[in-house]
Amino acid sequence: MATHSHHEHSGDALVDEAGKVLTDAGEQWTSMREDVFRALAEHERPLSAYDVAEIVGNSRGKRVAANSVYRILDLFVRTNLANRIESANAYLANTHPGCRHDCVFVICDECGQAEHFDDDKVTNALRDAGKNHGYSRVRPVVELRGVCRECA
Image (cartoon, rainbow, N blue to C red; front, top):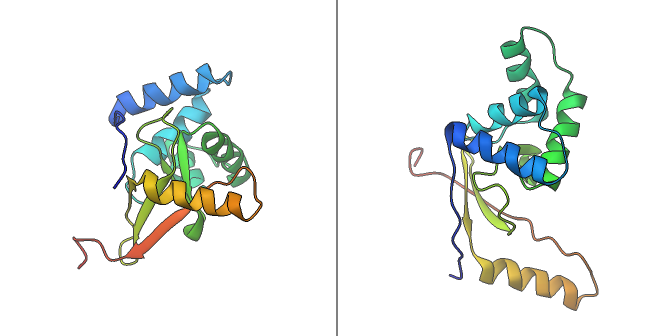
């Protein structure tokens, strides 16, 4: 398996790194963006925008619109702070913000937990296949479904 190395962050260090990556990209790190990112970072399973809106709303003591959360999540995906799990229309915090590569996600059908691994050989082969069929800006989306060790 062709892999590469990157530094995984967690806790406050992850939130701090996400803020740095976003500001380095020319965007503002607002309190709402931090709250949305923190909600993602505190969960191992992918969260929908509605899940995030509820979590942030509860922590702020007032309702937060899912549309606002969607805009922030879209920004996070564009700037590589979060990954979108396409099959679940849900999001995960990227534990190595700023590292640009294509992840392979494994999602548990029982508990919803998701994790990723890197396999550049697989994702590069998919990118090349798309280009060979005349597509440009190919972005591999690789998701595997199964049952995790804890649920098996």
